[in-house]
Image (cartoon, rainbow, N blue to C red; front, side, top):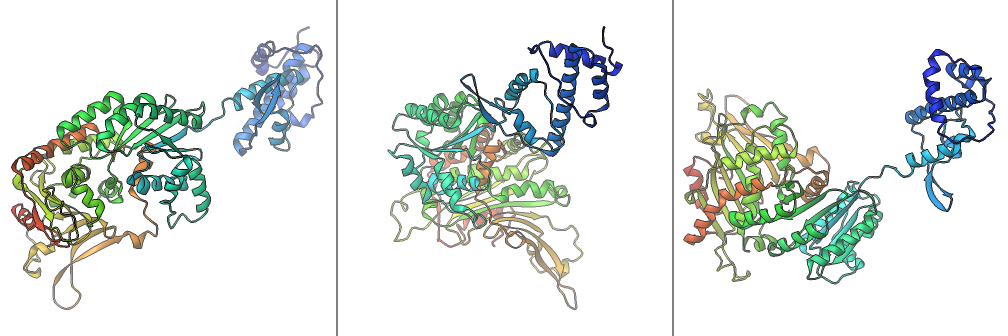
Length: 613
């Protein structure tokens, strides 16, 4: 005689029968004692109506168990109880699963799931597939520093990676690989790296333990003089760290320009993972002129996608650069002023100390123009002058930057001043015979509706009176100023200025005119200042930390895209060609001075008074 179920349970019972019919059942089934208070109303009715039939009894048992299971899973999601997997030996094979006893232990005290015996094997199997073989695992990350024994890698890249590891921005199972041509063991590389690793002031806690853990994850690959074989060896070592799971890789190419193509081609063919993304960091210079840069770009794009390439300039990792867009787009008081209507001129000033590192770059093959102006200066101007992007996505920002670069007027040699600091007796005589400039000043114009007629004056060099990195925005004078008679004879001294400074002290300054306290009416120019050292009691991370983290996150807005690279070279290459053709001799200046006198004539020709006058 058929057993009637409540109408609300008929559909569910049919589903239970179809499920239970696919499960092998033993010939006898024993009902477990079920306390009445533990069953919901629907389950109680089902138990009452099903008592007369063996088949329908099993259906009810299945439904009761599933209701209890759903209730337990809801509590699991709500309270976050953990299920700890264990290893079970089943027919000579190891299977990761969650046993029924462990489920009971991790369940709340008043909930003890009742599982019919003929369902136990099925439950264990499904639990294994749900919580054992498909356990969520974060993708592994391997970072390879190619040129690991070089000065840049030892002094900047490895310390930045360690700082990120300490701060928790790198996974615990990260693999750090140093690739070089030297015959070193893993321990040898660890000793080299450890000599330059220190903890920041805010990284004191467990510094030693973190350092040891980081070094234990550092390995050396001897690539020899055959990069193809070396990259295959690097790939094998990375796969040992990654296992069979999803894996991502970063390759930092800290190699000389002449070795870049061979290394990158070998890397592309032999070291890229197929189970995740690959990102390639390329150090400047990005070519020596438009033609060489184009050839280099075409070679890269034949092996990599554009989104994989990260052309790095560490100076773009400064907070000053990020503050350009933050200050403009997040403050209503500034955004309406950001045009030729209110801005008279913009000065981008970058002066470095006279160190051996700067000498090596400036007096090398590519000089101050290729080293500083092509990347750092032009990128700074592009970020400053761009139109509001659609979003903060890297590609949206790059789209706006390249529009600015394409709008910059080609440089006229008359608007360029070159300088070289005077040689002294304690410096090598080879510098005296070089025409490579250590100072560059120029006036740039952006031919678009927003910036038409506004001069962007650039001054960069080594050995000047101050070590300064700043952007100065000078505004127009107030039309028909009522207080003209109260201002000193030099009205330029009362020009409103907005100053974004990175060196010597990171700050945002706003120069305004105010009344001097006391009787009478006298105006004075004062600075409203935000000094970071006073406002924020934190140690500023190195720019390499910032940029490496951007690479890990896939944020590419501070890295030059191929079309940006081409546009920048199109601005500078004609001037570089004329300098070489005409053998232009740089103007000499004293170390610790203000630079070539010609820079002041340049400013005067464009109606600009340099900020340090």
